Image 1: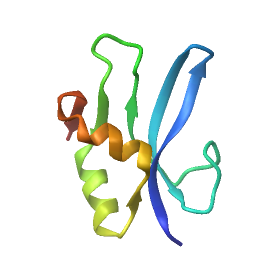
Image 2: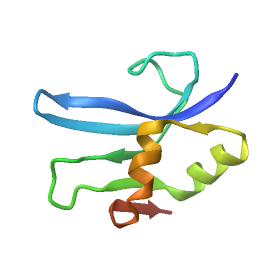
Image 3: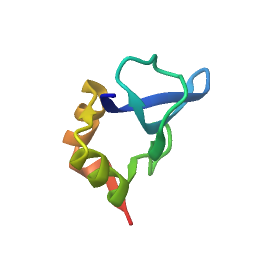
Image 4: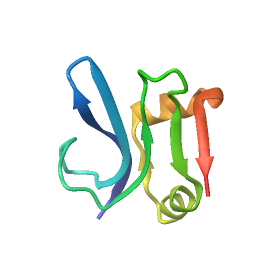
Length: 84
């Protein structure tokens, strides 16, 4: 199994909320995920990317890949918050 860190869209029309999840690479966007490691709320003023640091580093050490969309968000260091 090849795991990928990617965004899963939730919320309602015009107000998206995303979960940062670990998913099998072959699965579709909103399918069952292995683990939820964070969230992203772009519509909030404080809206940033919140990621659990321990889970994030664990999955990277296991060889998980990062999706293109999540990679773009991680490049904006101001919006990223790593939680313990």
